[in-house]
Image (tube, rainbow, N blue to C red; front, side, top):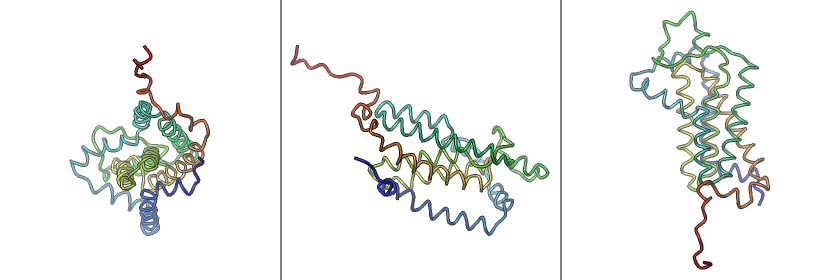
Length: 227
């Protein structure tokens, strides 16, 4: 049975509706405040506990995290693993292409004459180029949209959204990205993932019974009645 775009959107509305409201707030903030004002407002709000936690939160949007989750899904359902892995591939490659097209400096390079004002977290490797958009944020929103799409209990949607937002915030907190990079990353991750779900999940081969199984289903119990 073919899944319409309306059905895809309906299944992720618990994620999408609050996201759109937050996105509108982000756009207003961008209109009211400058790039530097937003950056230093976030950067100045720091403490030792956040310094300890944010590097781990940011790793949720790491490519290896997506791959690990897809591998775990493959144990139970090939279709879900394939959907997640390919969605990550599409959104992350798109983000990388945009990074090289825009080729914008990251905060450490952009504010190189004001480094003394910047709070940096010890032990974090600081990058200097290809800031726009935030790839970690793209990946986090890709995972969030897909997990909401899969969830039978749509009350999980806001939680997945919160986790994705936390990843985006961590990229700003760690001075790896600007507010604009993170906001754009959320839009790219959300829109491309919705389109990819609609296009791929309607493919006939994914509806075959063998795609609904996983590696854990390789062993079939012996039917002793036939012995």
